[in-house]
Each structure stands twice: as structure tokens, then as C-alpha cells.
Length: 398
Image (cartoon, rainbow, N blue to C red; front, side):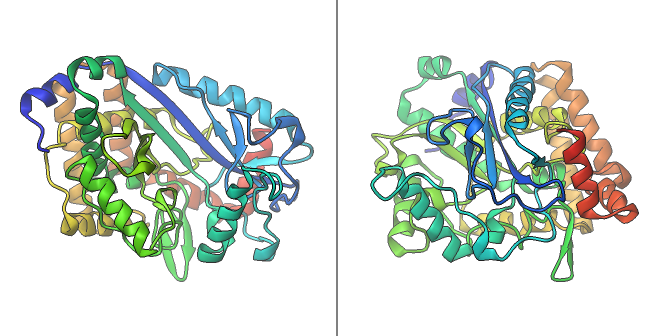
């Protein structure tokens, strides 16, 4: 469906919402090597602990914040859980960089996350990791990052629209956040590395990072069309299920795997762009949380725009280019155009002053390369080394 201006105006007036954050970290030894030990017992059962689990590997923790009412509440919750995790680690540290340590063990020795035995229902998660290991390799699975979740206030949305319209809104919002994702790929890039003679400002987000083996075009025009196109991709064998769709933006909810629009309940959007940023204690600049929320709100006003297959291919190319260390002049112009649009949006949006300050901070990084995360990290690595800098940060934050 195409959204009417009156509907978008109603959504833009909703000022409240819910926020959540997930952060992945590798565990490392005092020497900076990947810890091959099982998930710490002190953190409880990974299957039932709502705040700490594992991702792909036993060596890869995932911290999950509770859902909160404001960005201001996010980082204290993340810090609280991080403290619990650090206290549970025995002679190990959290690696605060998206790129793994340099000296990794043989690929087959990286331990897959274990979820019981074959008799346990949860063991399917281990089998899925075996599938991913075969298809993508274990090294790439070790790239770690941050996921930022946001939902508009559900009660207000439901007072305005039926669930089918809410679903379509989130699907179209996903499309627009994907269309211009090159902007956030640049803003949050903090994993510089040179791979196969190509230098990236975000190795994780670049072509050598972790993503599907091929671009997967989908139909974002409605929930029904989106689910039907996703179902067709799965049936073709390109991916085994919706969980293997590694887009940098996801619309999330319940009953989506039924692939029937009438059963789906979509209730939030997830941005998966942020690299772990070792320059900040919790792995992310607090200002970037405000920039991401602002970006989502701006994209909410664009959900009636198209995102066809040709535009999806262009968006993917731009996103890959934004992950490179050297930005082309045309891409710089496109990034500046998004900054300009966001500053214009702020002129009439009823948002607190912290949003303008956060966007201005990001814009300063755009204008002055020495302020950018990747450039700062490259300078630090040149004085020491990648492993030494990041191990020192891990120990300082223990």
C-alpha cells in the first residue's frame, strides 16, 4: 500500500516508543587470544537467561538489554549487564572490537554454541550453527556488533490503525532505512582493517564482512508481498529460513514465519549497522543512539517512497562503498545530502536538543576525517598494533 500524507502525519506525532539494544562480544584470554572455554557457568543457562546468552560460538557472548522507554535508559542497563558479565569471567576479557583478534585458532576448533544434546528441543540451534559453519565458515561468524531496536508506542499506533496497516508501515519503514543505510554505515563505522589489499573503515560492514552470499531482492510494497517474496527465496534454497536473511535492517515481531500477512504482528525495527566502538566504554557513542533514532524517524516520513529491485541493488552498492576507508566524492555528496535532510527534519520535529547536538557531532566527524572513529583507531594501531590496542582496552574496561 501507499501511505497517505494524513497517516504519516499521525505517526510523526507519536513521540513515545520503546528501545532495546543487543551487543555481541568475543571473550579473550589475557594474551588476547580467542577464549575457547565454554560459556561461563556463573552467567546461568544461555537458553533461559534473558540478558546474557551466546551468539554463534561459545566464545561469543550476547548481552541483551531489557526494553526501556528512552535512550537515556539504555546505556545504564547495558553497563549493568556488562558489569555482571565481567565479574563472571575468570581470567578472561570482553573484546570490544568488531574484528576478531589477529591470531585465531584453526577454524574447526572455534567452538559452536552448544544447546544441550540431540534429545533437547533447543539442540536445533546447535545444528543451525553447524549449517552456518559449513556455508559461511567460522571466522566470519566471529564479527561482532550492536543491534539497536526501536518501536513506536504500540498503544498509540493501535489507536490509529489496524494491525495490518501497522505491519505495512514497519515493512515500508524497513525498506527506507535500508535504502539510505549507506549513511549509517559511514556514521557508525569503527572496525578498520585491510583485507585482500582493500582497506575498510568497517571490515564488518564491507564486502569481506558477514552477510549473505548474494544480494536477496525482496518485495517491500506490503507485508503480504514481502512475506511471499521471502518465502519464495527460502523455497529456492538460497537461504534456509528467515533467520538467515542477514540484512542490516529487520522488521521484527511475531508469527512472521507463518508467511501469512493476516497472522503476522510486526512491532519494531532493528538496525544492525553499529560496529563495536572501542573508543567508548559500552561499545557505542551515546550520541550515535540518538542519530539512529533520528534517522528512523526521518525514514518514517518516507515510507510511501519506492524501493524496487534496481533501487535495492543501488543501495547495496552504496552501503558497500560507505564501508571503504576512502570515500568517493559522489558518495560524500550523498552522505552530506542525508545530513542536510536530517537537519531540515529537526527544524520542525519536536525532539529534544540532544538530537541536534548528536547530529552535529556526527556531522563534525564527516567534515573532519581526524575525528572519525576509523581514522582514530588506525592512528592508534600505527603507534602500537591492532591486537595490543584492543587488548589494552579490554583490560582497562574489565
